[in-house]
Length: 115
Image 1: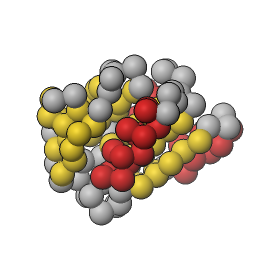
Image 2: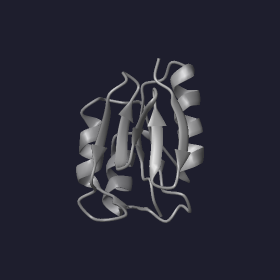
Image 3: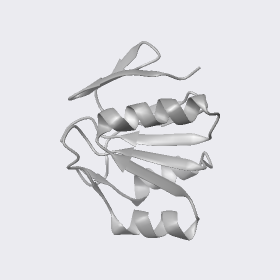
Image 4: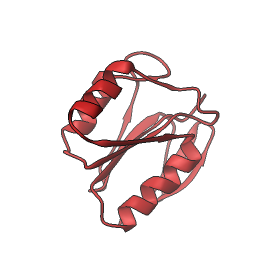
């Protein structure tokens, strides 16, 4: 079972392991620390990594204060593919990921750890 147990500025804990870079997490338990191509922006390169897993729901944690941006091209791509995109501050995104996972959804998330 995948569980994001805590988030605080600059750190997130998933299944007992702490991460200190932005992460992509999938319903199958895969976690990848990433550095965004453009700082503080969730862009197409990050979306493409998520899309390889074929999720039905994408959650974007936009940081502690919600300052991480989502590029217009990401919004267009998600809309074209009829995917659901939920965005919120990272603490709420953590909870939304856990809830969707418990409901059996194929959920993937990008969680920005600062901002």
